[in-house]
Length: 70
Image (tube, rainbow, N blue to C red; front, top):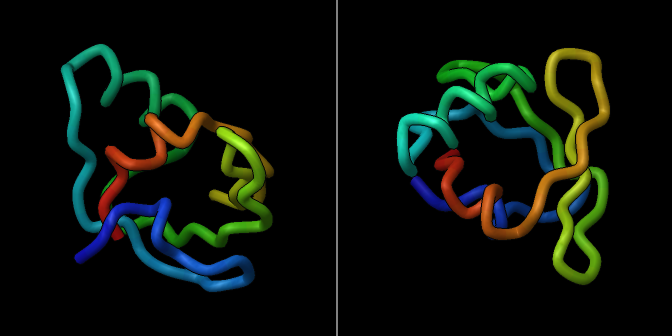
């Protein structure tokens, strides 16, 4: 298990756990980040991470991505 920020670009992984406060978890869930979902890192530059999750491309901050364990 590792944070999403450690996944390589183009690598597909499954979400194992989502950490953080309740409001952060709810926000990520509304974007499609739920336990068991497949995510693929499209690119990681600067402070943002762009991922494909549930057929959608989503940009989240590195801080948010560090709360998603894959």
